[in-house]
Length: 222
Image 1: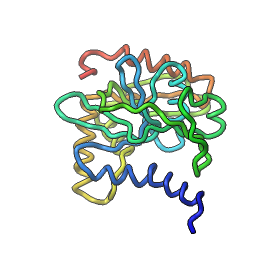
Image 2: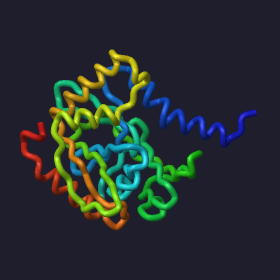
Image 3: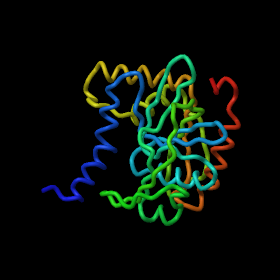
Image 4: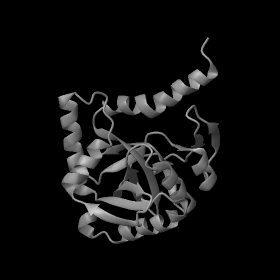
């Protein structure tokens, strides 16, 4: 007989690891390791490696008026219009210290998952929405809050590095991901977002994101 804790661990692993890779082989979109947020019609994606702080920053931005759609994975769609995105799982998962510091907002708590993280259900978006900007999180103890735009070639590399692949060694699939990422990087700006690992810095980070979005020229908003 399989224990409930084992079933929960399997379910968490499927949602966070297997399902993104399975979906990535469908074609027509990329599955990106990123949080997705929306405010006043502007949609942004926060990307970076596991453990960098996407969920904590997302929860902090949520407390400051952003609508959080998902904190970990999203599908990125191309086409004739602006590249758009949809959260793959409408969840927020926070470690105990982050849950205590920034909380899950008004979202319904589902308790603690098999990895010891507090899980909150989020409001779902019913269709992909155009992405105004990507932010690559760069967090260190003594960093000053700031954002700088990354050129298209480097942005393409960031998108590929943070995308899921069912089989990373499959050349045809790798070529498709690279071409898709290059197209997105040429049309949507990506910024390196630096800030200290300090909950108290989140309001300053939110203000920097707002300034960055306001400073985009029409050409950058393709």
